[in-house]
Length: 345
Image (cartoon, rainbow, N blue to C red; front, side, top):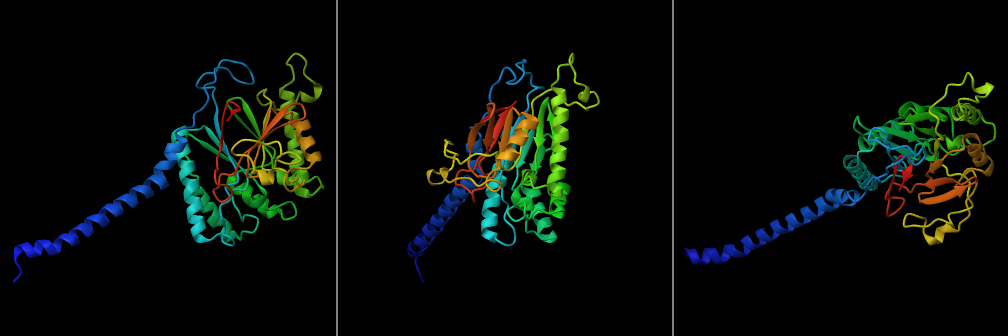
C-alpha cells in the first residue's frame, strides 16, 4: 500500500503538466483574440474625421447637419468557386469583414462607396455561384440603417468590355441598384456613378446607352450651375439638382501614363511604378477621359482598379484619387479613404 507522501510525489508532475497546458491554451487564445478581433479596433481607432470649420467648396459655415461623412473603398475581390480556395476565402473575408464592421462602429460614416470589383469572378459566375457570392457579400458588408451603402461596377463584376453582356450588367444592377449615369445627392454634394467598363467608345449598345445617360446628366448638372439671372434657354425645362460641381465615382482611373509620379505608403511598389498603363485595360482611354472631364468638370474623381493609391491632377487642375485595394490578397496594407465634405485623407 502506497503512503500518502508517495502519492503526492507521483501526482505533482501531472498537475504541473495540466497547469502548463492551461496556461498555454489561455496564452494562445488571448493572442488569437487580440490578432483576429481587437487589433482592428486598435488600428482604426487612430482614424479621425478632420475638424473643418468651413465647407471646402462653398466656404459656408458648417453645422453637424451639413457635414457629410463618406468612406470609400475599392477592389474587395471576394473569391469565387473557380479560383478561390476555401481557406483563402475564410482568411481574407474574415479580415475584410472585421475591418469594415469595426470602421462602421468606430467612424459611423453617413455613406460608404465601394468603387468596383466587388467580386473576383463575377464575370464568370453561374447563377448559383453569383447568388452565393452576393449572399457572402451581404453578410460581410452589412450596415446599420444610419449608413447608406453604394456600390459601383467593375470589370471583375461584369467582365472587361469584350466580356460584358446585358445579362451581367442587369444582374449587377438588380442586386446593387446601380445605373451608370445615376446621380446621388447627399447634403448638397453631387456624386455621379459611372460604369467605366462601358466607356470603350466603340458604339456598342451598352456603351451608347451609358454615354447617353451621362450626357443627359451632365446637361442637368451644368444647368444647375447657371446664374439665376442669366439662365440659358436650353436649361429652362431641365430638372436641376443642387448647384454643386459633382464628384465622379468609377472603377477605372482616368488616363495616365503610369504610377511613376505616385508616392506614399499606399502607392505601388517601386518595381511597378514605371510600368506603362494600357488604355482601356489599366486606365480609360484618353478620349473617354477627356469626355468625362468635358461633360462634368468635376471637382474630384475617385477610382480604383490599380490596387494602389495615387493622386494626380488632370487638365484644369481637377484632382483624382485612386483608392488602394481593401483586400489583403491584393496588398499587405489594405486601406480606405475617408472624406469629410470632400476633404479626403
